[in-house]
Amino acid sequence: MTCEHIRLADGTGMIVCGSKPWPRSKARCVKCGQIAEQLCDWKVPGCKSGTCDAPICSKCTTSPAPEKDLCPKHAQAWAEWKARRSA
Image 1 (cartoon, helix red, strand yellow):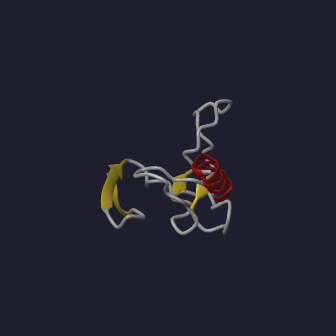
Image 2: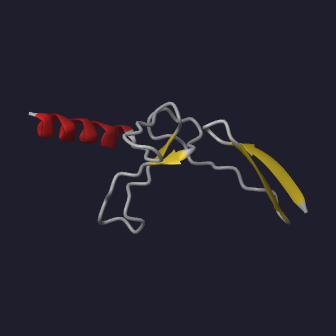
């Protein structure tokens, strides 16, 4: 059995053990191209998962609430929604 130590974007770590090596994410951030650690959580009714799921890195994400991440496109939509609501 092989075990791998993995460091998450928030600084916490985890150990994953199994008969095969843990596959590294190959998804790239939609904005900068770096390895993506998060997926966009913007609600998209037409998607199977119910959310956008665009890959985003920790530097390019916008977090409107704890445990929520938005891609640049949906961060802009969020800002526009807030502006309309406050007007």
